[in-house]
Length: 467
Length: 72
Image (cartoon, rainbow over all chains, first blue to last red; front, top):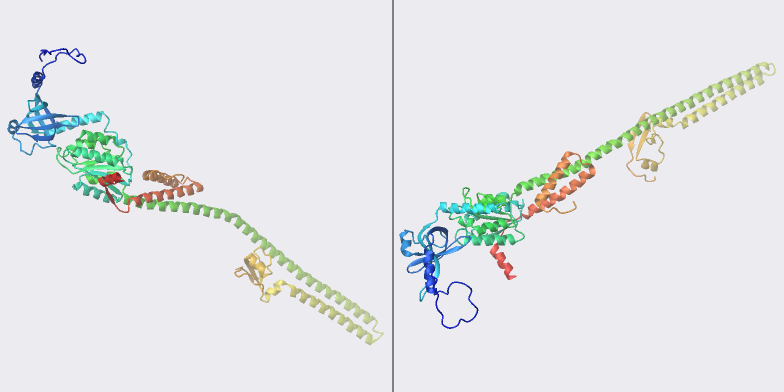
């Protein structure tokens, strides 16, 4: 640039100028600036075309990516030389342009401006996109943005899922089919967004943010069907990927086909190959299977509780039966002894009665014989007297014998065993004690009925009625 | 059970612990009955969670929800 200064008439007014070269005439400065810029290196740039416009002589547009933009212009003559279809250069197209910086100094009727003067333009190929993608991938990975989503907890059974997808895409139906396969019928909030053009990335980013801001949303799925890398390019958008990485809600991506690997797949919590798989990743639990397993669990718990109580009850009952059996054995022995004692006592009473009878007979016999002897001795006194004495002696013997026989009958009449022989039965308690009243029988609940030929157990069923 | 489980997976995890403990046969009667009671409560909770996503798919639109929020 020149160092020429312009003389100004009169005294300067206002603040003093800083110590800089100049002032220079602006028109000349503008032309010098143009020369200087045109002398810069010519380069190739890659980016997305936005704000495309045409004048009679040139096309102009901004070339953009996530970090910035450069205004570009291309003479129509240069553009025609490229042999591009009219429709190829459009907003949203990823292009490679060749050229260098330029400056238009403006004219009497037109504004000045900076532009990147393109002399070469072609659509970006997959190779270009892959190179850009790789560069961005390395950058985001180095910043640790691939790990953030993977650290989030993913609920196995979310109630509400957010889905970002195209409203009319096949991905929507595939996703619903995946949910049906899981047997999941909760709430889906659709965040519909364009999934292909230059509006796609900002719209998807906004939908993701809005869904994540809703407290009920527990997982978000981002999905679209397959396409070329250029079609899927929105899902490699740097802002979209940075936003996704920072969300508090886990994001499940299913973009394109299995072989496609977009950048959002890298930052998402889980990357799936199809919308159906994304649905299954969003609901990891197979609801039908879970319900069956839960039913089995409930049944097992019921059985365990019942068995725990039942086993222990049986064990306790077995323990309780031990002493009861011992008591019963003792009671049986005791009853046996009582019966034997009673039988012995009864035998002794009978024997004593016989003995007394025999003694009485002997005594009476002797008395009779003594009386007969006395009568014989006095035979000379009187035959009548002797005869009278004889009769008196025999009568006395008869009386005594009759009395003794009467005693025997009376004794037998009082023998309880005799009563049983007559067809009666005696009620006893288990311990052998006789039960003599209906009330006592009712109280005992269970009695033994003793017959002449043996005993039987009996249960008292009716209450005593006092008859 | 002293508190409501925070999530389905937490409930299932606790349920599995309970069943392992019961299967071990080492729990006494009191512990067995307590574990069965807690287990039944967890089963009820899990069933209610499954019921919540089993009655019918509900589809909402984010743009409509946002519009509704703005008019409120």
